[in-house]
Image 1 (cartoon, rainbow, N blue to C red):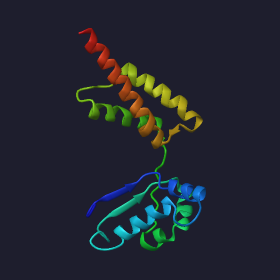
Image 2: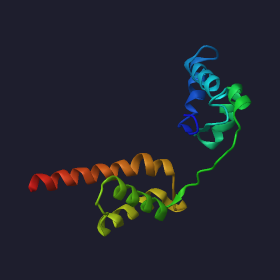
Image 3: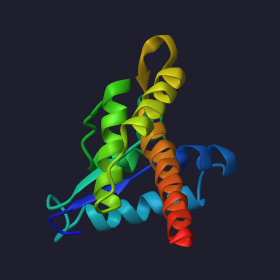
Length: 155
């Protein structure tokens, strides 16, 4: 990890584990202690960026529940704003093109994707990045893989 980036996704789960199992000696406490002990001393100290990803309203709880985090790491908030529908469609299309070499999202599929994103977004016209990345992209990839296997069986 030296000189790199350590991403801890769903860091707020540590707080949930602590609430569920109580204070002291629980797994969440051990995880945080191990993280701090390794990241707060040389050679990793000041050479690794640690990104703990969690819902904005749970950041303060995370740092309150684990004072060692607040003591050793800066709390810098980076807000991930929801995407406009057009952004979401563009990201899905780019991911398909990158992951499935030579595969292009046809206009008819793009239209269905745009309609579905618009429906899900509702009046706000916005979609969470997590929904797009964790749900929509894998679903589209699976659909393309199934379609490809059907075409291969016909050949």
